[in-house]
Figure 1: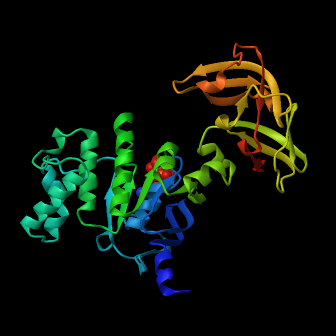
Figure 2 (figure 1 turned 90 degrees about the horizontal axis):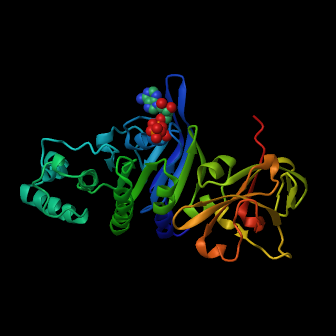
Figure 3 (figure 1 turned 60 degrees about the horizontal axis):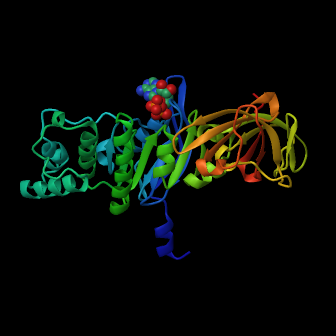
Length: 363
Ligand code: ATP
């Protein structure tokens, strides 16, 4: 292969067999991961799955017991944090309360003996970059939570790190600020082209911000993929249940291409699955009031309708396994001409790609 091409496609960060124990507890159970340069990666998973431990291993704050970590081709596995090339932002802004905003941002530059005028220039530039021009003389307690997190971000960027690590940076902020900062951080990362890893347990955050999502559970990686791939093709029942909220039911595959679920039969690709399966049906991928000749047309009655602003959630009793109601998330326009009074007869079509099938877990 052309060496130029090789260099361009080489991962920026590469982890192999990374394991970490805390006493008897195995927090990381062998992590292999390649992160492309300039990408925005989210570690996504429930509390306690090892996301922060993995981030801290990359930073050298929690050294892995075994395995290797390479950054830009350099083996950093055994380097202390101070000799690694990263900036980090935590959930708690961790600013020095007795230093001004400018002093907080320039703190690392002082240690690096950057001359005062140059420091001032970098700090002013970063204050503009994070949308706080002219705030350098304020103290952290004079700023809102969102503003303090912007200062923490500027401080992390001041040293021009090759890698930006964000550990739940938005969790402590209220919803509106969180949404705005999501967009700002993503925009900033694109402009700077800095490889970034963000830990989050919020699937919306990961889906809207990431180029690549690493879904973790129980110290292991469940799936790595683009937001689209993770959402549309969850590789395991765990990912399907963690990313998105779907109708869950049990079924049986007696013959290829069909799954029996309660009194319904759905014609969907079944691959190599046979016998008991778990079905997950995407609420926004289903359609109401279908004509009579549609494939996978289920009939039932309206159980409940919930208004939620941009649309409605409709629950339908249609005899799925254990009588779980089938949930649909619909825009208002999709409801025209439908009788949605409780108990009204209704039909739903289920496109095959709205159905995810998984082998019934054995344990
Ligand atoms: P959260 O979002 O709750 O922080 P997480 O996925 O980031 O979850 P980690 O903080 O990585 O989870 O922790 C993974 C597991 O390791 C947890 O069960 C936690 O209790 C344990 N753990 C983490 N740090 C330590 C430590 N210093 N000593 C002992 N156990 C630890």
